[in-house]
Image (cartoon, rainbow, N blue to C red; front, side):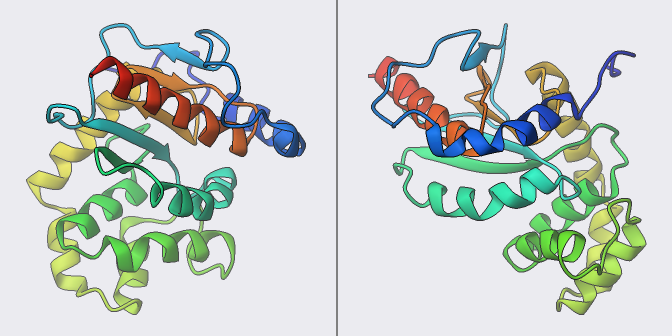
Length: 219
């Protein structure tokens, strides 16, 4: 599958950026239920990123290390995910507009080595605060930076080139396409609901409401 010629990944990101001042005015958590077409899009024939156990809910954040809105959202998501019920599985998924994406390659390689907690937040810092990585960093530059963080570079480079990583990159690209995500960050619930929000606070509020909706439907 290929992206259509009209695919513009940062349209929604720009709209979200412009709407950030509205965050303080976002509706409270007990507001009216989310409305299809306004608060979320129902994904036709949608399926989750990973198989679900009975009663389990999957929350996927499609993100980009180069996206400054994702960077701003990251600490909020880290705090929010700790409040989620045990039956909710939260997953970060790097955006893969192309299957050779260096940051996505580094993410999946680090994940395979169990090094994601060491590098994930540090990668946002490297791009947006200390300048250690450019937004268009190569896999070699990412491997070098992760080596500075204490990751075994030889093992990392092997993992970057592994078939498992290539398969995950392909799968991430396919998930991006079938979810209809038009930019980052995008939150997908159970592969079926794509959150539409006007602020970062709204993004998490609507996600909470959709999680509650899915859990109620599974009872």
